[in-house]
Image (cartoon, rainbow over all chains, first blue to last red):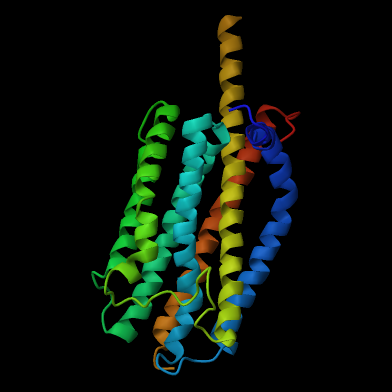
Length: 251
Length: 46
């Protein structure tokens, strides 16, 4: 356990280091998030071409797809924080998991809502019990379960442990979401972009999508960073107030 | 643009939902910073 990576983890991920580093990075992160999101969405809405089959409805993709990626990406972050919490009992990982939960739930809800808005004109239905849609709905409920569970105990540490176990068990849903369109015959289209192989999408649509996705990712990171900074300060306030109360009662 | 209402609502939500998260997060951080400064003005994070 006392490897170089573990020592680095504890050195760079303690609350003091986090506050110093995040304070320096946050302005650049926020500006980059704003510029890239506005550019990606503006490009997708006004400049990119309409699809030959879907027409202008394809423009919903520039909101829906980044949110779908972030729904799964955010939960991956939650699972990583849960491992750090359970294995190394890392206090910052506990706080990060608590702060990622509501943001991930918000982006998953946005993914479901924009998917529904895309599905109605294309499929003729707001919702179908398709494997992809259903597995993302399960992801949304997992996020809500985590949000509720970490706040359900008087002792926060017990809430963090219970939430971490739920997050790790729920992580089994991530490959199901990813491969649902390959494993089952779904109404939802298969992936157009993968880590291996060329994307089956025209560059005129691919570039605004990638820029919007990067922008939304930085927005997600900005929100979680700011919430985590607030959580660290709130914990510091509680600690100071308890120390003050203890010294006054002892005096 | 027969699908304009669907597109408009999707983009509206796509901007509004993250914006609400951003604004509430910065408000919470500012509130925590004020409280911390009031309790301990010398604190390095406030």
